[in-house]
Length: 144
Image (cartoon, rainbow, N blue to C red; front, side, top):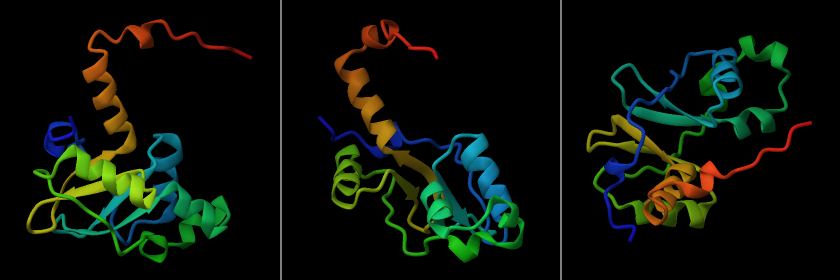
C-alpha cells in the first residue's frame, strides 16, 4: 500500500535557503508563502540543515529583529533524510516515530532533490482511496 517510491509523490521544486540568509527571508517564505519547512543548502546544493516555523516561534525573537540573525543561528543541523528510492511507508514511519512533518530527500551525495511532508502522504493515500475526489468537492466552508 505504501510501497511506492518517495520520488513518485515528493515535491521537487523545493524552495530553500542558505545558511547566511537572514531570518527576514525565512519569515517571508514561511509566513507569506505558507511554507512550514525550509531546507538549508550550501552553494553546491548539499543539505546542511533545516529551518521551520517552529524554530522561529521557539526562538522568541521579535520579527523586527530578524534582519540581525542568520539562518545558521537557528537552523537544525542534525536532519533526518531519506532518499528518492525509499518507500512512502518509510517516510510515514519517520513522521510517526519522530513527530516530524517534513523530510528533505537527498541523493547519495547529500544533494537536496526534494521534500516530502505529512500532507503529501495524506494526499497520496486519499487520492488512492477516492480517485474522483468527491469529498473535497462537497466541502462546505464557514465564513465569519
